[in-house]
Image 1 (cartoon, rainbow, N blue to C red):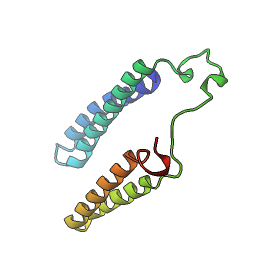
Image 2 (tube, rainbow, N blue to C red):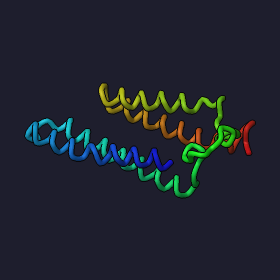
Image 3 (cartoon, rainbow, N blue to C red):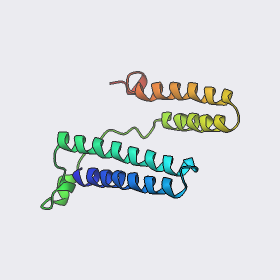
Image 4 (tube, one colour):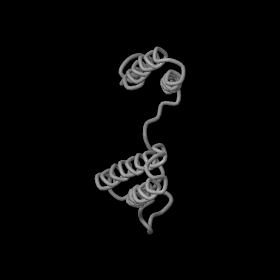
Length: 133
């Protein structure tokens, strides 16, 4: 994950001076542009730091080595639940939340409540019912 971490950190460091130059060009009056780029830089740096620490903890993957063989990357890659409906509920809750920003705050609060229910359901999906561990 070292390549991905370096790439995200490089992009994050790149957008800091770009946002500063953009701010000077618009004389700091157009707030969406430079603030959006500063936030983009922060998000890229957060992802880069996460990938860096995860790469150090996990170790080198076959994708990180030049001498790796194709068969080294085979096997189980993780645990995914293809029958889960909770991501759909969470997506609908987020859509309702964004709709609430445009329409009215009461819709936002309903979407936030549904999002909490969806997150709890998704996290505890394998603790109850047919698929409990």
